[in-house]
Amino acid sequence: MVICIAGMHRSGTSMIARMLNICGVHLGEEKDLIPPAGDNPEGFWENDKFRIINEEILACFNGSWDLPPLFGDGWTKDPRLLHIHSRASKLIKEFSAYHLWGWKDPRNSLTLPFWQAHISGLKIIVCLRNPYDVYLSLSRRGYASNTFSYALWLTYSQQLLAAAEDENRIITHFDSYFHDPQSELRRLLNFLQIEADDETLAKACKTISVDLRHSSGKINDLLASNAPQNLIQIYKELCLQAGPVYLSSLDKQERSSLDKFEPNFETDVERYKKLLASTTLETERLLNQVFE
Image 1 (cartoon, helix red, strand yellow):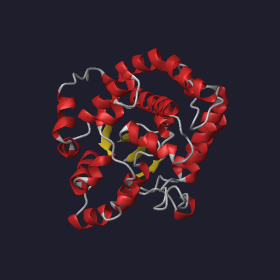
Image 2 (cartoon, helix red, strand yellow; image 1 turned 90 degrees about the vertical axis):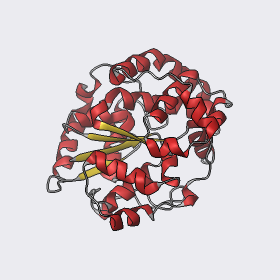
Image 3 (tube, helix red, strand yellow; image 1 turned 120 degrees about the vertical axis):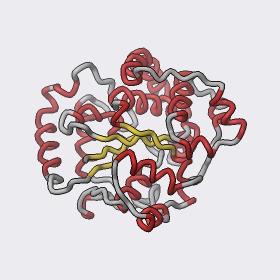
């Protein structure tokens, strides 16, 4: 089984990758993992070889992690990607000896169709966090505009959801790991059909640090921050799919806000593709507004 860990930056992808690694998911040789840094002292748990390929894919379309390209239909067959496809195939073969492996990179949210062309039945973990908290985290790193952060969150989320089939994805909320981490991790492992004893589960959950959580915004904080309505819609829908641990972590006011929300779950992938197409120009406008 191959696992792709994706989601917007600052949404717990590193934390979740580390826990899954302890539970038996091979992430690559230690020398290939990006070392800890000031903005991620617990480690990124990110294989540099996959990161480089993802960055090259984005660069082929004149994009980057913080200025995502606007991919067209059939973009994975673009001739500019031929040499990258070849390198990706070789990289995947390096993991052929492992029955359970994966990689983590928030950029997977943008490049997922590329990897799906190489790996059938790819399991996708969608790491979710309140966009307001993502904005606060990015602002501490010099990205002060919530307009920028929200446009980026929309792009990452819409492109990821448009590519991730319902049966092959699971949504896990960052906040769940500060409420009942073992139950939420067990939920992930059950989805991935990974067996782990209670001791391993406890060891994995001990890696969770409260220092990772500099903010814990509420849904109402997001509503009060002038977030775009389509962002709020998508976030609330994803919250409702984030499992019982997350829902039980909400206070009465937050749960009431979700209960009043009428989601539209039918044909998720197709609907998100349409939503992505309809809001691409708006997202581009918001990003351009930041850089003008």
